[in-house]
Image (cartoon, rainbow, N blue to C red; front, side, top):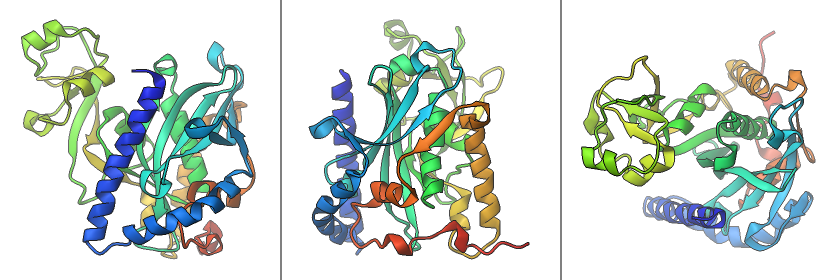
Length: 339
């Protein structure tokens, strides 16, 4: 499957699950229909706001550059220059979301992208939420720590625009692992399955049949283990295992791996504090900011720069949503802080 095909598959996947979610909300008396109807009228205004940023490309491949990340003293020949950061809306972004795209400025190759669904926070109309749906890094650029960089850049956007970060149902253990590193946790009623993820070693006993293992034309790099093998039944088809280069182990890994949750959404602790006039929220956000800055290694010379100001960033992320007053959205400075 070509790169263009992969992006098209992602768009179709988003459209399918978003449509199902919209129908579900409508049946339960939600506001999905009203949002969808208003979104079309909002789009000309949204693109007018997007044009404050530099537009690159045409048609479905078009994206708007909202920032850049410069690697300093990087030994990797692929990143001796800059990673460009862009917004790429999908058709009907209210339903289908947007992509945060990452481009290698050296050769204009797509390094990867994050699929996001941005919306009003469910329990507070004055708050906005950005939910991660998925993330992809092109094969050429894997193994370079970019998943953590992508996550940090997205979280920087959220922090700068005072947006609550979250994740919808995640089935990829590596994405779950990255989310957990930044403090994301499954919701209390989120269900999901806890698994161990560890490097794959030759000779591991897997739950696959011997014929499946013999016919395998790819080399696994990691394994998953759950004491209750039934909990993983149906969670990963052969295509999932092949794409993620993983196998399901019958025995616990040695040494033991890291525990993560799959088949569940994720929330961040800052969501529990924002908008509740709780001074702890400022401390929680400060901890997240410290984690993000440490990952980006800005003290070592790396530099993340966003074009425009926080308001234009917020408009690029949420400007397609009807009925949102950007002036009324939550500001960190509104939180009282104990001296």
